[in-house]
Amino acid sequence: MYYIDLAVTGISFGCMYAVMSVGLTLVYGLLRILHVAHAAVFALGAYVTVLVANASGSIALGFLASIAVTPLFGMAIYRLLYEPLLKYRPDVPMIASVGLLVLMQDAFRILFGEQGVTFHRNAFSFTTFNFAGITVSAIQVAIVVTAAVVFTGLHLFTTRTRIGVGWRATVSKPQIAASFGVDPIKVRYLNFAIGSALAAVAGGLVALLNNLVDPTIGFVVSYKALAIIVLGGLGSVRGTLVASLVLGLVESYGTIFIGAWLDRDAIAFLALILLLMIRPQGFTGARAA
Amino acid sequence: MSAYEVSIISIVGINVILAVSLNMISGFCGQVSLGHGAFFGAGAYAAALAMVATASVPLALVAALVTGSLLGIVVGFASLRVRSDFLAVTTIGVNFLFTGFVRKQAWLGGEMGISGIPATGLGASGNMIMILLFAALTIALSFHVSRSWMGFAFRAVGEDEGAAATLGINAGAYKLAAFGIGTALAGLAGGLYTFFTQFITADAFDFIFSVMLMAMVVIGGIGSTAGVVVAAIGLTLLPEAIRFVNNYRLLVYGGLLVLVIRLAPGGLAALARSVVIRVRGT
Image (cartoon, rainbow over all chains, first blue to last red; front, side, top):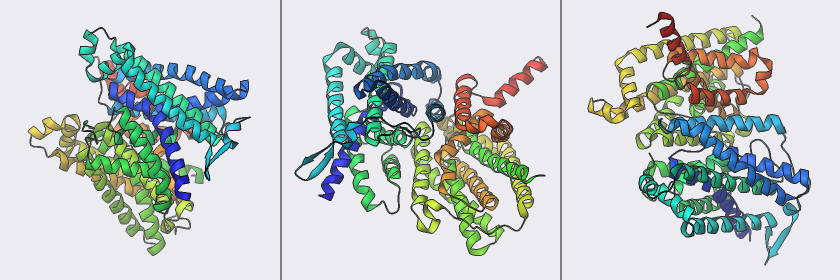
């Protein structure tokens, strides 16, 4: 039973990682920028969720508010920070992105306090279901369902709608897509909007899971997302999903096998470094460097 | 001098060594490292173990230097495999691995760190003078390297590896050299830090600290030794000089980092150069 419980934890964490990292994958796929500040968007989503939920008494309203606010923030990051830096080497926007993350994290600390903010009423974190002796919390179910909805929705959007197809076309062949009338700048904004909204959802779910939003919420998670998108073969949404689930499970089981000599959070980086050293082109063959 | 001034000057000296050594790797040679804190930490832990075991200052410094450099050369091999932003990610990973590993090691004191490290016997002022001497040597070495053939090769590799290779420059060897020298100095700074605090924990060498070092390099002007020294001194003293900045240190560092990259990518060095050009009217 213990091992099954670990699997449940691993899968729910994996789904959470997937929703969180998919925005990063989208940005990398389109602009070849490692958008580290995605974690700041994630944290902003978590804060908006908890603050609006506490003010209005409705967690659903909290999620809606964060889905409304974060895309604007994500698009502003693109417009004000990345667009002028696209002409430089890719490490330049990345360092700027790290700077923005550090700045935002400190801003959250100053505005909302070191201790963080908790939900006044969070019925979810105490509700559990029992399936044949395996205990699953309502939030774990919510995370898995959200991931399923997000990835199915993203798949349908990119294969069944005109904008979605134009988006995919721009990612693979920007010039040809433009000559077919797809506006590449609009696609970039769309990309940041969708990725940021998904990060906000993930942030809200993590806030519910921990029943706490503190300034460091996005921090370690953000670097894990970097590890995930590299492991998933840069720019591949499906690869991101697989890598997230694998990392969730490896961490979950890894804590019992190698937890004695390595921090849980360092496991992702061990995997990342090993992969980069053995196959710098990634699993799928897309060139990493 | 008050004890406070002595300790501030000591920290300034250590940060100068760290920023100048990072500038050799990232500025001269163009290999972005966001994990400089790990090499600093490796040196600090090596010096701590050496001091606890032998209480010999020279031995501890050699241990710190060698440990930092060895780890640096290992990470340097990564720069032969991945470039640019992916090298940056790898070095972030190295930093997290370092702190994640150290926190779990009983022989390194785990979460509690190593305390009760024997004093150097030089006193606080003596330590400060030693730190300043090493800082001066580091700056001199940085100017020397910058003017030497090696500095030329570093810059060639940093600008364009392919072009450097056609000039017969062995890019891989120079990248390893940059990492080896830069991280040896970071290890040395770690040893000096151990003498200074006599108490170390993994938290002092985390990724945030590495970002602050990178902020010093970028704000000073990536590749400019003088600019980086000025930025390291200024950014270390700023939170002390202006009290409210101390609470908002990361906000200020992060904000300056973003603003400088966005508005003045050359940093202080480029600003100073343009002022000089304007004054001279050329």
